[in-house]
Length: 101
Image 1 (tube, one colour):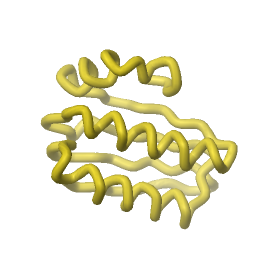
Image 2: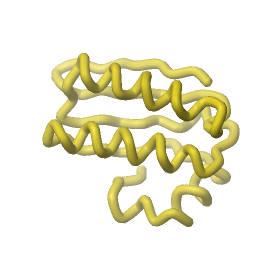
Image 3: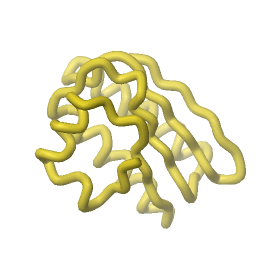
Image 4: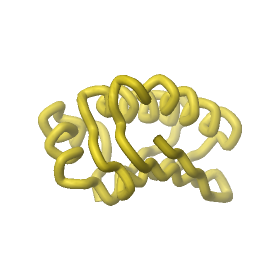
């Protein structure tokens, strides 16, 4: 799983690529936590355009990112959600917490 970050002025975009599954979820959460802790974003964009597969572990990854950003008073947007990952996230009802574009 690849994680890349861009952004400035307290806006952070984290792009994920590869599989988001139980083998990679902990590393993703740690990486997102680290970047949010360093950059203290008011606005976090999670770009899932490069995700090839997501299981229920992806729900935990997004919820963790939401929680960490909310602690800073920030907002989270999820972009470029692949069809398969979208099914997983919608089934969990994440559209009630996060904005999807």
